[in-house]
Image (cartoon, rainbow, N blue to C red; front, side, top):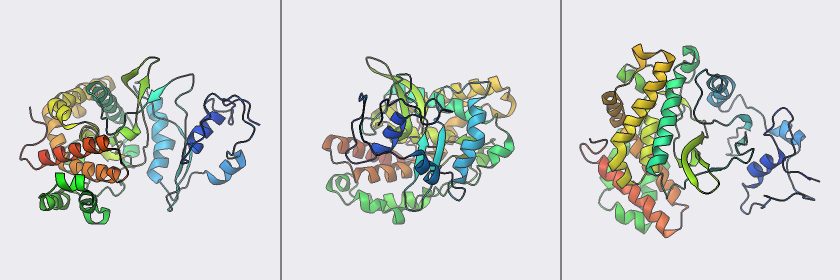
Length: 359
């Protein structure tokens, strides 16, 4: 019998509670049990510690870069003299499976009545949320330069991030439904050429600009962002960044371009993209100065803009791929319309000679 949802399973970690296990495991069902606020439950199916010990283990044949991140990078970042200004959840254990039965057991970030919220992709981030997220990610990129060079180099063999239109059936997805097909009508050849010419992820991208590499998150969109929630309303304060499974080295600016392209509606993006790059410049260079690494690592706005443009067409390919995939599951008309419009506006800008980051 469970009499207290805050009962600790692992006494060595105050956040490893039954409530956390239930939240992470049961909510994956189609009709999750509503267990919040229940003080006593006579019978509920949760894994025993023996089952967790037996089945939820690090798999050295799986995500080696994630293991490296968990074991070596995260402790150094979290214990740095310059504090990280957002939270990265501790990973207690994970299991990797070729059959897509991956399992991550993460730290509960909502202890002590802390509340977080996510922004739905279709709703899009507002200006203040984008500013907060970019400032925090820039802070992290700069802080990663304080890591030992050998540790940073261990992430140079990044996962395959090429976007192959044919195998991913992106054109087929876009033209399989009337609403997306209508928006992209007459653009089939341009679409295919975009993926053909810019769908490959550029290796050693930082070297093209003579930069030392930073640690790149690699998957910066709303599904991995959490913001603080106050008692009476949602705030714009960036609080946590999840899912570090494709972490690798690079310029870092691609994290920002992806955030802007995927998470923001076109009107807001076009109006504020230059200002957001300036926020990145200010936040990144502030930490670089604190680290005493000004000589090699300060980034000018001109350079940041140049790098952002360099990444733009690949990140446009990724946005089209991601949203086309999500639209296959989204049935609500208004949300579909917003997502399709975000796709088409980005594609239109991508087809222009100087479509991105114009002052």
